[in-house]
Image (cartoon, rainbow, N blue to C red; front, top):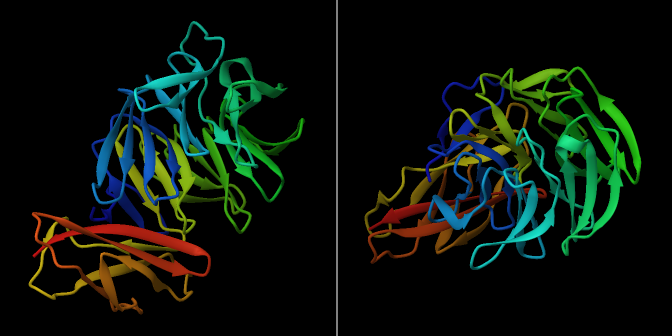
Length: 338
């Protein structure tokens, strides 16, 4: 899908709109295939954003979908309505672990995979505990003392997990059974992640901010109830706006801009694509792969890159472009017709 500038968001870095029309988008997960799974809290659907289809919804329904994790090829979702974690199956969902619900309905929130990639880190939000859970549903460890842990993310640099505690207005580091307070004064903090340069980033839903705690600066303001937070493979920041029904991309390194969907081409005509750099990001960016097409030129400065897609005899065809800069990768799919 074409990546447009996200309206209503103020940021020193470029902000792109990846998807709109989502139903109360909440937590998200960037997947290995370059697409983003977004839980639609309002109607329980899981939206897949990116790829050839642009935006599709998975057939399974998880009421009040919150955290999303993939382990061993299986997708796990936090079902806030029923206070449980479920695994998506071909025919529906399977309960992995059932937690104790509370009368308010404000049950578990965000979750993550563990550092080994073979289990789950599940904040039992209303009970102030964080659980390490196997994919079979057994509780391996339980750490208490939180007010309302609402988000978890792996922090490999510290060998633990970042826990955003919205009622404590703080972010903690959970390492083994030890809890360390990293930052406070963050009202309603819902999610926290750490960049590969060590910066701690958080979202503050009430004030509509994406905030760099380490630098003490806002990365984006004007977000309407931001609820989901994560990175893509180029360390750009993905954030949902629940009240706007949007998925945004805050460009921290580089991103690809594309022509409108189903662009019409003459035989052999190349497709031009743009490169959007964050201020200060000057590393070279080159084509790693073009699927269903041939690379022509890498983007350079203000000059767009070019590729020639394969012949299209269908109403619409797709070419996939992957750019690289060091270890960072950015991919997009472009639809076209001859």
